[in-house]
Each structure stands twice: as C-alpha cells, then as structure tokens.
Amino acid sequence: MVLEMQKYFKYFQKNLFNPGRLNYLILYVTSQCNSSCRTCFLHESLNADNDLSLAEYQRISEKLGNFSVLLLSGGEPFLRKDLREICALFIQRNHVDTLSIPTNGLLTDEIVKVTDALAANFPRTVVSVNPSLDGMREYHDRLRGVAGCFDRVIETIRALERIKEKHRNVQIIVNSVVQSDNIEELRRLCDYLKSFNLDYQAFEPLRGDCRDENLKLPSDRDMKDLHQMIAAARKCRARNVFEKMVVTGSLRYIQKIKEDALIGKNWPVACAAGKSIAVIYPDGGAALCELRPVAGNLREHDYDLPAILLQVSGQSGLREQQTMCSGCTHICFLNASLARDWKTMFKIPFYYFKK
Image (cartoon, rainbow, N blue to C red; front, side, top):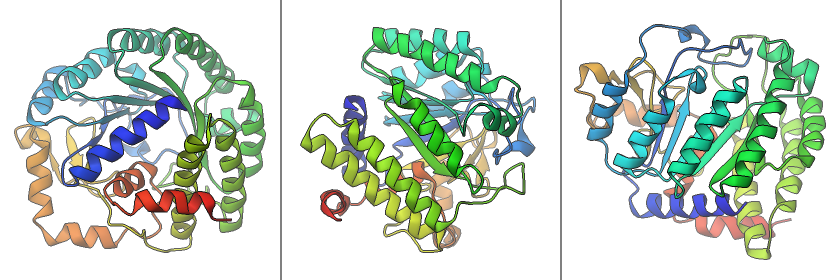
C-alpha cells in the first residue's frame, strides 16, 4: 500500500502540472504468447514475427522525454529474452519511476529472475508484476486455455512474495478480468487470495473484441455488488486514516465512473489518450489508445512517437475519437485522465465520506 501511495502522488503531480506531456506509455514488447485466453482482444495479431528490436527501442527512447509509468505488455512480456535490457533502457534514459508488467504467470523462473534483477539494479523504481487470475482452478484453466495454469500462477505469486521480502520496491498486483459468467468465481478468488502478500487485486471489466464472442460484460447490478466487495478489501489494507481516505476515495470515484460507463454515460473528464498516455505495439504501430486504430508506424516516422501524436492531435479526428468513447472502462486511460484534472483532489475526499 505504501508503494501504491508513492506511485499515485508522483503520477498525479506530474500529470497535473504537465497535462499535455506524455507520462504513461503502454509498450507491447512482443506479440508472442504461450496461452490462448478467451478474453484477449489482441488475439488476431499474436505470434507474428515482426517485433521491434532493442536497437529500435533505443531510437524510440531517444525521442521521448522523461515520463513516469512504463507498462510492458504483450503477448507474454516475459517471453522477450531482452526484457531486462528494454526496462533498463527506459529507466536510465527516460527516468521511468514505475514499471508495470502484466503476465499470465506461466514462466515462473523467468519472472522471478527478471523481477529480482530489476528490483536490485533499480531500487528507486517500483517494479510492479501483475499475474492474471480470473477465477478458481478449473474456471481459470479453461478461460486461459492452458491445463495447470492456475497452479503455475500461484507458484509464481509465492515466488514473487519471496522477492518482495528482499526488495521494498517490488509490488504484486493480481489482475482479474470481470465478465458476466465469472462474478461468483471472483468472489471465491478474492477470499482465497486474502492469505497472500499482495498489494491488491485489480478488477477490470472485459473490453475490446475478445477471442470468445460469447463473453459479455457484467450487469450493472453485478458490477456494483463486486465494487462493494473490492472497496472493503482495499480498505482493510490501509495503514492509517489518511491512506484509507486516499485509497478508498479514489477507488470509489473510479468505480462510480466505471458503473456510469457501463450504462453508456461519458466520463466527467476529457480523455487523456494521445496526450499524457499512448500505446506502442510490437510491430511499431502507435495509437492513442488500445481500443482505437493505429495512428502511424514508428518505423515509417523515424521512431518519433511525439511527432505521430502531434500530427494526430492536429486533426479533427482526435476530437471525434474522444466523443466516441462512451462505455469505456479502461483503467490506464481513466487514471491518466483523472490525474490531469485538478477537481480530482476534491472528488477523492468527497467519495470517501459519501455514504
């Protein structure tokens, strides 16, 4: 929880006082994947043979200024053999203070090795590893398309707990995708994970065109009930009244926005997509958001992401895209957007005290 508070305040400060500057980069470091998740919204582009090289990432880094958060995704990011070098590049050159690495959790030895090395070599950088669990054993294995997946993820989490004992800058967050048929599974999972030394469990609604077209978003009622359970669990991890207010207040505010989005309402703030947050795909494609079309390919634009974003921001299409996003619950973009809005400072205590 301490790391989460530090991350939040650094991120909020940089976004509030530099609202037009890139501060969060979602970097898909590989299209290679060793699972077959039914919830995946990038399934059509997986396991291609055109990932950017380390030398190309060096050119991308040269064009960027300093920024706070680097989220390394895939595919499965730990399949990338030079993942440590990519992380080190952006930490050293762009002064990234938070690494966030979502993972299916199957490659226990590699995950432990990379996490341990990064945490030891960069003690001032938060290394947040985010294994995925969407239910208990039978359900999770079926959803992820890998026999024994659940047990291997639990093995990874236990190993990461030992790394966390060695390094104060390691964070463990379990990511869970919420959809209509796993609400009870998630309740059981939340109870099961209470004995683990997690920072917290994150719950995000299904998004995009997933591999299994039969999967659906949860109902408004189910989402509200699940949110109450989540808020209670997060509140218990707070150490003092101030921390409880910041964590619970911000969580409830975000939950309210998500609940409104699920019934078609717009966000109360302008989306930060293409301004303080952007996306780079394994083949060099750059986008304002994961749920919007590619704006250009870095290989064709001298590896200059800011130039691509500037070009798109000068087009009317950016304004159109920002009005097309009703129903969006994407937490990365929601956090980036709220962090740019000064009213968020007052919304947090408001939602903490609101009954």
